[in-house]
Length: 156
Image 1 (cartoon, rainbow, N blue to C red):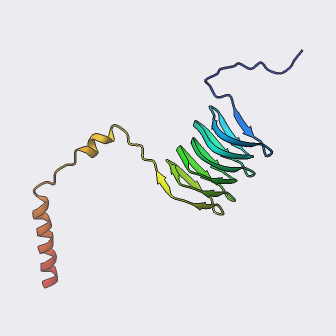
Image 2 (image 1 turned 90 degrees about the vertical axis):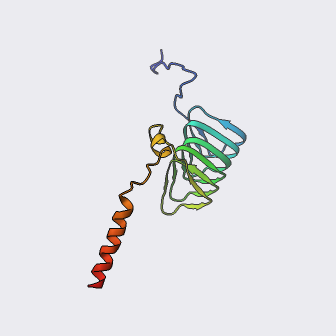
Image 3 (image 1 turned 90 degrees about the horizontal axis):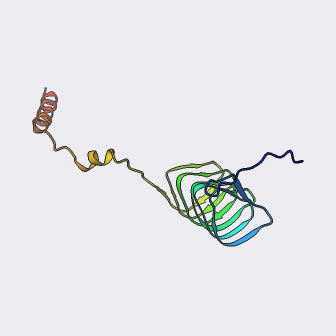
């Protein structure tokens, strides 16, 4: 009789974290619906758009990564696109361009590439930005008065 708890299987819901171990080499495309830890060698592309991808301290990745969150502790040569957050930790080596919403780069990390913030605009902010207010008429005379006042103060 088993004492292990029964697990329920839900195919569309991530159940945990997948790990690519130190001795594993993968060449090709990785699509993941759960968090992914890469501690081995990966060449190709990595996508986990609703989850986190972590390049472990032993990870050697030559691939573009698209994920919600990306954490790099090892070596990555490729572009990162993170809809939420990118963390580049001490000892990491990243060569590639990064698109992010939030980013953290620890002292001691090596980064060569460009950074581009992904701006998410809310629909409530769009009408305000789309309809700028025209300047009010009294603004110009107030500026002239201020200039004249400053001029007369200098003349005294």
